[in-house]
Length: 145
Image (cartoon, rainbow, N blue to C red; front, side):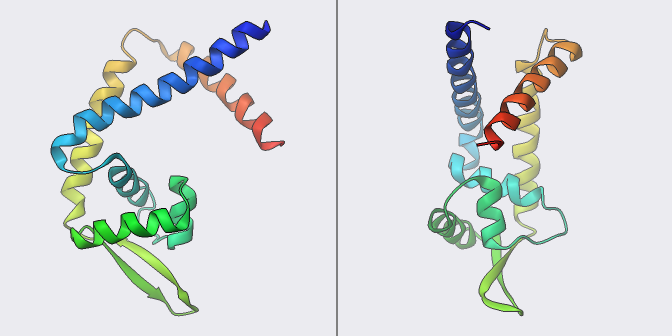
């Protein structure tokens, strides 16, 4: 791939990520959640029955501990999450989704799924698989660093 194509690819990938997230954020605005908050809720829901520690959740979301702590404070104030002490480590806290968060997460996932259907319109499975392979190879190269 010529250097300019690689540059263009990188720029398109960054723009795609920003634009996709911005559109999802726009569609979720009516739920009264910032992008950072709904992202935390979605990541937390993906842990299913296993309660993550605050550190594990921060790694999953890709934010620093203090940033996550502020987000969890606001989600806790809204009654959507709670923190539980860890017996083995008094400094650690497990993060638990409260029942009141479940309907909200279902709405987030429904809106997210609808957007994904719209964005992948006209793109077949082979194209998606090929793109995934390319992305996986780039990620593998990044992990070598």
